[in-house]
Structure formats: structure tokens, C-alpha cells
Image (cartoon, rainbow, N blue to C red; front, side, top):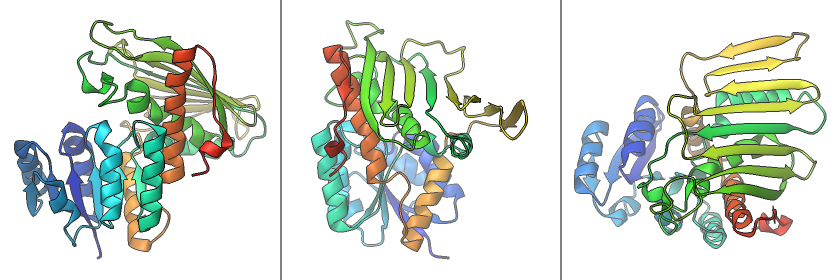
Length: 334
């Protein structure tokens, strides 16, 4: 069986605890090489995955003719440059979110990927979570505008590098993009405006960028989605939940583990439960393998990546001005 030969650029905790185990359990993948500027991290990842080699040099991964796909799992400020270099090396790309720290760099990534005719996937997983897919199937049976709400709250470390604007971009670019993508997946309409109210709710002596907000996204068809992103949250309470309302029906997803929907199929209520949390990572990576092996469209491709990123930039714009930030149609036409 043909496999997707893979190399990792970045061997941090998320790569080692999420992506690598998923690939090791999927027969469509083979992890050939791992790279990190921290040699100990690279060595540990190689031992864990039985990779053929580890390195501290990006070019060794990009120059390896046997590697089909590169995972970019580094700090946020390096994503755009590494994606462009990987595309120019003819490698397919799985890039952890965010796509880039600004719109101009997103455009550069898109142009490099298209020029080199490689496949690109962004690590927005929640839009592919099985319960979100089920919710979308239910919405597709209805007519009318949608109202949706998503909560994402947890205590987030004040000292984390994500809060550094020039490295992490802040919570909205670094993690809020997951939720913005989830909303875009549920809608059959283009986002047209973003309004955010919030600011820095952690220690302002340490965190110099907004970390929490209520964000409302309006879509072209009049649908409205709101997310609460709270960095000074409570670890004792469920981190995430989604509520969706349309055409006198309701859908509720709790922690990507429990789902109930009301008013469908002649029933007052239907429950749909998993025995564990599933935020869509396995689905995304399995679909990516199929796209590479069969030369079909990659999941979470360039258009999907740009939409989530663009909304995140508009959040920061709205917070800085106190007014809604409009999304122009041409900003999607790259």
C-alpha cells in the first residue's frame, strides 16, 4: 500500500501528543523524519515515532526527495515563511494554525502554494469534528437564517508565547481562528462584518494584547454567530459548547462529546453521544492522506484557511476601533 511519507518541522508538545500519534495509528502515513531547533526534542520525537532520522535543519527535511508531506508545527510567526519554502520545495503542506500573522503573508502563502501546485491544509479541526458535520447535515435540511453561539473558555497561562504579538499573534489569531472556521463551515454564506467587545482580562502587566472578547460575525444572508473567548476562564467548567438555532429547531454540542438536537425528524429530542472528545483531528488527517494519494482536493484548503485568518484580523481591528470591521469581497479573491 502506498503511504504518504511525512516529515515534521517542529516537535513541540502538540505535535508529539496529537499529530504524531494519529499518523502512527493511520496506515496511510509513514513518518520518515523530524526536525526541531531543540535537538533533544527532535531526538525524542524520532524515538517515539521510529522515524528514520532527526535533524535541527529545516533544509534537510525540505530537501529530502522521499518526503511527500511536511507538517509545520512551529511557533506562529514562522508559519508563513516555512509554508512558502515548503511549497517552493514541492512539498505538500499541513500547517498548524494560524495561517500567518497578517493578511499580506496569507496572500504570499496562497500564491506560493498555487504556483507550485502542492496541496495545503490548515490545522482548523473543529469544523471537521463529527458532531459539527452532523450539525451541518441537519442545517442543510432547513430554510432560514441561523443564529449560533460558541463558548471557548479556560485558564490560559499569562506567560505563554501566544500572547506575544510578534510571535504568537494573540489568542484570536492563535486559537480563535478555530471557532471562526467552525462558524464558516456551518453557514452557506460569506462573512461580511466582525464586531468584538473585550480586551485584556489577564494580568495587563504581563499580557500586552487583548486576550478575551465576545465576537459577533454577521453573514451575507443575515445569519449571525457569536463566540465568547475567555482566557481567564475556569478549569472546573466545560471548555467548549455550541448552540445553533434555525427554523424553530435547536442543536446543542457540549465539549465535542455530547450532542442533542430538538425538533427534527418528528422527535422532540435526539441525543448523539461519544465516549470521548472528538474535535476532528483524525478526520482531517485521514482526508489529507486520501487527497495526496488520490490527487483530490485537500481538506481545510487555502480558501478555508484564509477565511478563518481574515476574521481573526478583523477581530483585532474591531477591538482597536470599537466599531464593526467590514470584510470586503475582494479580500477573499486572492
